[in-house]
Image (tube, rainbow, N blue to C red; front, side, top):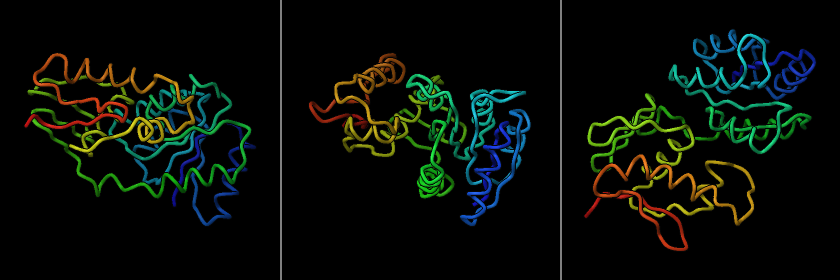
Length: 225
């Protein structure tokens, strides 16, 4: 794999680079968020490893700008900002995984490999459509009845997952593992909260509703019969 490391701590950057090189991968190093954005958008990288606290442009802003530029390369945040809210914020910004410093290189490598095993977005269906709801994966654009719907990154990810599984049930656990990738308290209401927000944008202003609750199981999106 060819990886971009955006890290202003030279010791950490060289440590990660050395480990990746020993594992047979090639790397480019960058210590500034603005430069990292330019490289990520213009380069041909398999994964970007980024700190959040960067000069020039912070890591969150860098990743948001990448996504706005339709750059879909996966991003792993490696940062000392490690609270639950911080991790959620990083994923909402468009990050694919989140590793907190200090970290074991073997864990970072495992997470990078897991991301690399995911299907290439270019080989997947890029425009999803159910009834009058349409999702353009590359443009990150959602419309229903030709009206543009503004979704936050996590809402978009949930909707994409439901659309790809049209007619099939997506369980609460599946959403937690795929969208959040954390071990939450089983009693958490985070899924229900996000589904409610998604419905308010995708279903409430339109008719008929497309997102359905399957009691004690999860959710299903399907066109009306």
